Amino acid sequence: MVANGFTIRPLVSDDLETHIKRLTQIYLDAFTIGSYSHNAGKENEPIAIEYLHKMIRVGGEALLAFDDGELAYPDYPIGFLFATPLTFDYLMLETSIPTKFNVERCRYIAELAVDRGHRRRGIARGLITTYVSSQDTSKTDAVLVRTNESNPNLLKLYDNAGFQKLDDTPLQHGYVKKRYFCAHLVDPNQDSGVNAG
Image (cartoon, rainbow, N blue to C red):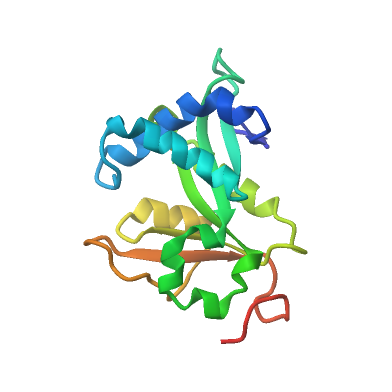
């Protein structure tokens, strides 16, 4: 996908090793600074590197965003989306989602981050919509994400990308309320692997 001066493409075989330092930098910057941070400081680089690798090892995939105007393109990602099988999200087991969805036919947006200097350009939405539209509906019924309910910008982003709020909230860990959102790829009322419940 090419739009608004940026390109989105899937992670290919050598990309993770080629871009791991940059992806880790974006990840740590996004999730260690600001009111929505949820990881410890930048000293966690080895943990973040292992986490990004783990998402791919468990059957995940990723999209990378590149700025078409950057001199370093295509060697300098400015954003990413990592998605995994829904079973990767252990908190999902604390909800009624397994009784409502065939979790083996669902994908999960595990991580979405855009470099601070490139935000507000539609990159995150581009990553989400590119990922959702790339799913094979013969294998995938829905894409889910779990996010912080106190972040109105993120809620608007997923709403604008066609996600619907689910009533399922995992048990509260700390003080942050998390909520699941779903983008149905097939009619959930058809017999397509979604359990009646």
